[in-house]
Image 1 (cartoon, rainbow, N blue to C red):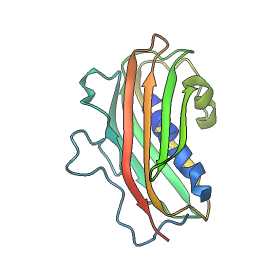
Image 2 (image 1 turned 120 degrees about the horizontal axis):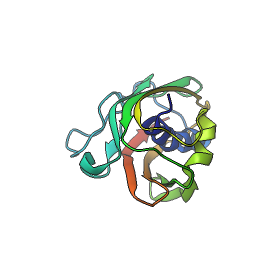
Image 3 (image 1 turned 90 degrees about the vertical axis):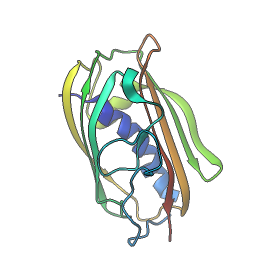
Image 4 (image 1 turned 90 degrees about the horizontal axis):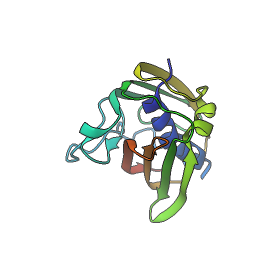
Length: 174
């Protein structure tokens, strides 16, 4: 089955993995998790949070797990996600994507979700229903140190919000 939440997660994490061509993960770094003080953490071993209370989102995420957590340079990161898509997603869906390294914006663009899904072996339309996805990402050996933040705001073809996920204050050290 096809799974938008994992695709959204991959849209979130792929730029960070690509930006990884920029420092090094510290192997002693604690697991990446959403800050306990944040209002809407995504369940699982991950640093994700919903941008707002997810009651009206068209995607119910059961869990997202990263392994290893924290990710390690030069290793394969496995992303596992489970959830339920409450509506069909068709061509014309978009993702507003932003990746920052400290105060520097690395990526700020709106991309076609269906085009991006091809990168994770999915295609539109995505049918509604329960879904599970596992994706492996090979991380580069060098990732620039610093504080990263990532945001992916997903909309259907009518420009109604499907979900919004973010990860703030992800710190990588030498």
